[in-house]
Image 1 (cartoon, one colour):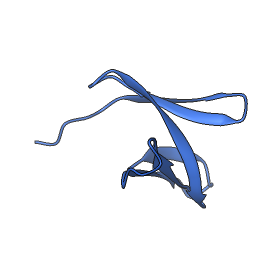
Image 2: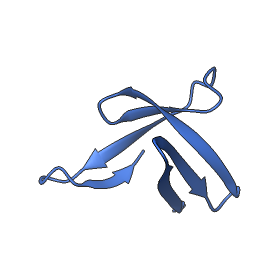
Image 3: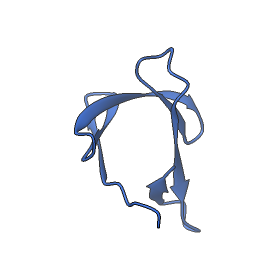
Image 4: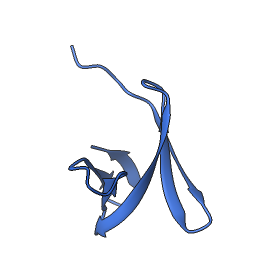
Length: 62
């Protein structure tokens, strides 16, 4: 069974962050391209891709 993870995405000024429940942490996201952002620290290979519905509204992230 897949686990569900909860994230809260928010901005502070012109910076983008997410807070996760497990582990509890706040992470800054840096724009890479389109809906893709890389995760701090910049040398990390981790990235976030925001998904959109048919209307173009962000409805999730992978």
